[in-house]
Structures are given as C-alpha cells and as structure tokens.
Length: 478
Image 1 (cartoon, rainbow, N blue to C red):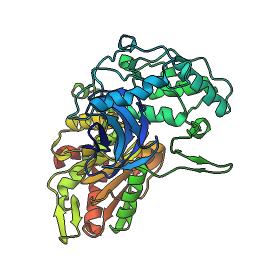
Image 2: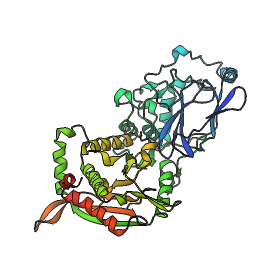
Image 3: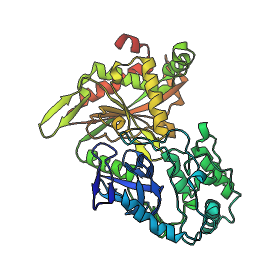
C-alpha cells in the first residue's frame, strides 16, 4: 500500500477499500501540507461505488503534499498523499515553522484530545493523538474560520447573513462526530459541521441536525426540496461536484450512481428480460402483519408486509428451485443455487444499493424479521459493507413505498429473477361473490428468459400471490 520514493518521503496509495474496486472519489481531506500525522490517524474520506470509507495513514510523519483535490476520482494504486517520515519529517516541518514565526505557537497541551475509538480500516490500528494543524501564513484568526466560512457561504448562496453559529459539536481531535453519509449530505448542502448542534447518541450529528442547520440558515420548511439552492460554492482548488447554468445543472456520474448505471446497462443488454404481472388480494396478509406485531416472539423486530412478501418468495423458490440460478456464459452452463441470498433494494443517501440476506432460505420468520431490520437500518446509516452487496441470487424491490402500483424491474447482474412489489391500496374487489373493499397490490416478476421459461416464471409468481392471498399456506408449503 505504500512505497518509498526517497529515504524520507512515503507515498500513500489509494487502497482497494472494497473487493476488486478500481477507483474511489476523495470526498474530504482532514489534513493539509505541514500537518503532523500519526499511525492510524484518518487523513481523508473517500467514496467508492459501494461505500463511504475513512482512510487512516499507516505511519508517523508530516504531510508534504496532497496530490489530488476534493472531488477527484482516483484509480486504486495511485498515490494520493506524500508524507515525510523520520528525519524528513523534521525537514518538512521547518518551512511551516518559518511561515508562522509571527503566530503564537500551539502547544501539544493546547490541542483537544480525542475521545472514544475512531473508525479505521482493519489492520491500521487506532490513532491515540489528534491532528496538529499548523496555522497558515496570513491566517490571523483561525479559531473564527468555521463561523466566518458559514457567513460567506450564506452570502454566496443568496440567503443573506448566516444565522448565529449553533453550539459547537463534540469533536474527535478537531473533527465533529458524524457518519460518512451525514458528512456528504452536509457537504452537498454547504453546511459546516462545526456549526451544527448534535442530537444523536454520544454527540453524533444526524441527518436531521444538518437539515435543521439548513432551515435555520435559509428559513426553508423543506430542506430536501431544493438541495441545489444551497449547494456550496466550488473551491478554486477542488473539483466541482456539479455545474450550474441558468437553465440546467450538470452532475458528474460517479460513485454509486456510476456503478448502478453500468450494472443496469450490462444486465439489460445481456439477459433477455421477461416481466409478468399479477394483482392479488392481500387483506389476510395485512391482518397477519397486525397479529404478528402483537406477538411476543416478534417484540423489537421489524414486522411489515415486506417480511411476509419475502417469506412468500422464499417458499415459491423452494417449490420451484430452478428459478434460483445464474447463467455461466463462459462455461455455457446454468448454475442452480441450493441456497438463497435474498437481495433487498434500498434507497439511501448515496443512491440505490442492493444488500442481501445470506442463506435467507434457512431462516425462520422471526429470524428473517431480524435480518430485514438490520439490513434496512445498516443501509440507512450508510454502513453497508461491500460483502453484503455481493453474492445475491434473487432480489425484491418495493416500489410501493413511493405510491407506485408496479414496474418492470431490471435484474441484478448474475441473478435470474427480481420481484417488484407495488403499493397496497384499498380497492373494490369481488370477494365471495360480492364487491367489497379489500387490500390489493400488484406484483411484477422479471426473469432471465435464457434459463427461466414462461412456465417456470409463471409458477413462481403464482405461488407468491397464492401465499399472500392465503398466508396460512406459509405453514403447509414451507
């Protein structure tokens, strides 16, 4: 991961923070040239196609150069920062000392001490000291910089003077406590985290805190309604994240969106898709959901229609195992899987991701409820690991949460089927010979027609519908 270019300078290369990823975008630098760094200290945050990750440096020294500005996408294996170590560290520090000769020195005793464990990559260890920032030449009041920056930003965005700064957020070293997705949200909305009052456990800044800061600054009632209106002005040294003109905005395609686009194009033009639809009365399923919520066995678990839909699909796969397969083009073989890694499409601040529940076929209904709850909460917090998004065999996408009746979903690459679930609505329905109001939804099953023919696809979709119409079949068919 590191190479020696001379006897005193080490080049830290962009690591493969996922599994086989080729590039990552530098979201934020936490150090600048002249800063002292220690083994295990986080120096930057990067975003890959799968996750936002903080990178720690694996040695002590003084930062000599940052090779790329924030917003740059860098290939894995490319050096991103140069650090002077050993004797070179002292040499690198001398110019910084001269540059601030007229500025009161900051002693180690004056530095804020980090509290708690900082997130690091496996194998790098944990930093036990804070970043020592040397004030730059010409900086007269570094302590007031965050507030001043917020005021200038508000003026640039056309919102008038910034509101008084909120109480300073708890920090680790000199950084407020916030998770990577929250940091990215703050960056996109032009919010300085140092001015945000935290409300999360342990003084962590949440998404709601960031939106509250935007509302306080702009007076907006719906901070998410127009994020472009409060986007930060581009830094002269940083790569822009979007390009605004009078009538349009251009947003570079990278990160999750870039990976999703490539995967969907590859899937759409590789696997011949067929989609079938069925509309089903799920009134009994909705009643069962309410009963399970009162069951002590499900206390503290996420119980909703998606849980029973997932179980219905698993039952249908057990009855029709050939649908759980993949196409091996090189070997010209159909690979039937004797396990189900159930993917659940999740909309997150970073875009659409599809983590999967490993060996979902072997889980009881309470276990499946626990797995679904953990998957959803992890995705929303931006903590989904690359491994959790690999190895899926079939997927469920719930477009009903957006009020959509159904859709024609595109297969995840390497999978043979994906089930779209539409909105569950009260509709007039013929029940026992009479028209009555019933809870109704529409299901759509897309499948790879190379290995799933119309008969097999129809059987799977019909079985899912039958279970949801008569959920007692979960007992007799499972």
